[in-house]
Image (tube, rainbow, N blue to C red):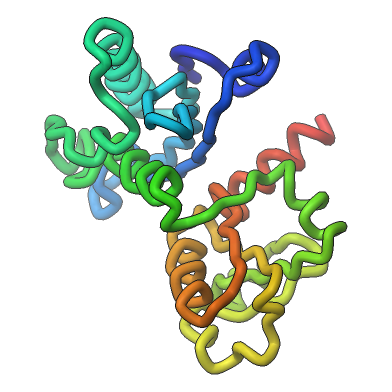
Length: 218
């Protein structure tokens, strides 16, 4: 487990505006043996993209990702430098046993950029029940097999590749989509936006929602 900068709780308590993203990439290239999931939460300023903090947990590679974020934050403080967008283009050391061609840091940049520029509106796991109470339809865009292995209760399963053919089943006025970690949810969001939907992607997908539920129950 590693942390740098502000936590979400500390930022909210201090009245600081923030945007949150969750990602769950592998610690190194998935085709190389021993890859482990690294779960990261990154906070940034929704107005200028400056990075406010990050947390990460996993069995491998947590320290170096937190080190990169800490360095980016130091550049912010000293030079008004790196933002969430800048993480997309960082050139980091690569070898299959140590990292992926697109590192977890780069992925945080891609996801953060989509949120920061409004390409992918998101909803946090703890906001889901409020959204449902307000009438939001929640759709699981994973495969039927994944849905059967565990899903958010009361959600409709429409795999992302079937969305265009099943628009008549979707409430285009208020819909939330989710997948395992967020990538297919992002694709589903773009498909539904192109069809006029008011849609949000559940940030971090089923993995983040499940972790949140375990935290509540513990």
